[in-house]
Picture 1 (spheres, rainbow, N blue to C red):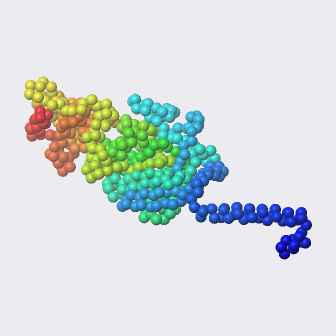
Picture 2: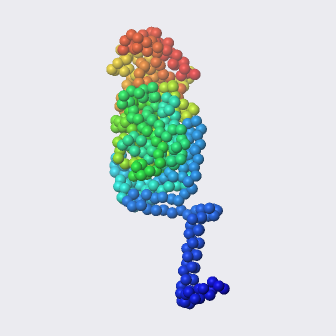
Picture 3: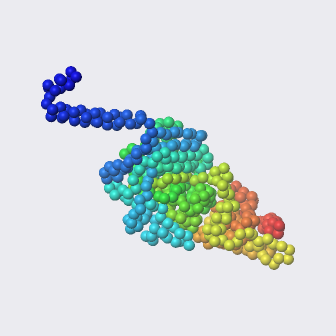
Length: 469
């Protein structure tokens, strides 16, 4: 009562009304402030996701759960990452999609047919200017990053899943992760030479070194300019690839082991590019990947993938073999793949029966430059006297042509050398002859070989016996 009398004497009725309205507004403001400040502590509320555009880079942010965990099992690292960005594919007019520079059959089309094999372009969005960037770097909730690196075997490789950004100019594969996960990881960077012959990797300029780095999504990290819809395999065609034997045992066999599980839905990224090598084995490369090969060295665009294998798997200590511990495939399946890719018709070597008038085909690889047979005519005459049909041929740059010749034969003989690698095209149960006497003659005595046909006769007879079994 005392306070009412005091207010009555001090303020007019109009002033008291204004004071009441002000007090009510102040109460409402205090209440709103209370909810804003203490809202996070009032229990679970529906999550609000929002997108914020920030200028030319069109960088997007999402309000997300920032909890993360790091699990490590030997060389396998699993990261539940809340700050890694994923690349969104945005549908655009087809004319806005620009094709990559093509290394194989560049016709200007993003979809080609070569030998009835469809070759496509794996790009989702093409853009080289940040001011027109369509694929934005949007953070995704609880995105899982997987990283497994093997640097102990004969072949170095890393298998990666997550937000992967490949910078060819610095030979680096960036894996965007959270700061917490990077701080708690044992390793955050690896050096890989993606060529499957580790004992030779220290040679100068043998194969380009590539870095694999865990990074946070900070402003100086490269932004995606080219996003791809399929996984990628990055490998080198440098090293000894000019040698036919090394082309198979160091590259093509482990590449088959690595790429075959993708059923051609994989993008090849080549480092240490050799155009002639790519052209020579174009048929096999196109049989393993349905997409245009990308020369990844020294590029100024950033190619982004959700899955990457850098280096090749399946290499072990035996030449021309597949490591069963890292691959579900075998050399038998690889040879079947070769026959299918090159349309080789003969699956099994001739099985000669009693009274059979068919003659087994014998291929003599003479070699002309070095380690050559000096008496090819005498060897052929001996073989013909034993009912062989003799063919004399030497491999050249035409892989398919010689593959068809050797696939048509039942027995192959030659001096030790890269040319005998063509045995991978032989039919099942065929016979290969490489004698120790010739081997010794090459490495201990001299380069060219004169074969003693009388001593060699039992070897050809034995080959006939094997074909009868």
